[in-house]
Image 1 (cartoon, helix red, strand yellow):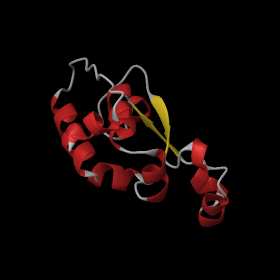
Image 2 (tube, one colour):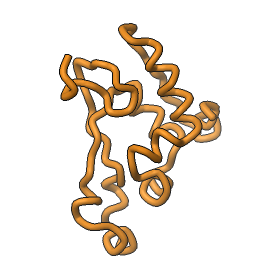
Image 3 (tube, helix red, strand yellow):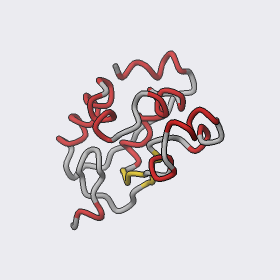
Length: 111
């Protein structure tokens, strides 16, 4: 499968990729964000598989994503996500199902 169909985090081939905004849309309306980032930076996206997308939003708030973890390098360096993507990479062809949690306290268990 070509690179266009590979997750940018785990690098696994995927039939379906989701778009992840590195700076969440919900934070764009804040004047502070509009002044800090260019329009190009605000609309920068990466294409990732669903198993990688869910843990991002499970362990990080939109504020954290906008202010601290707003590049692919920072996502890969974040301890909980680094641990998860390392595990996912080992599951080359296996389908992966990720459950979501409603409580932020239980979401932090990935760390």
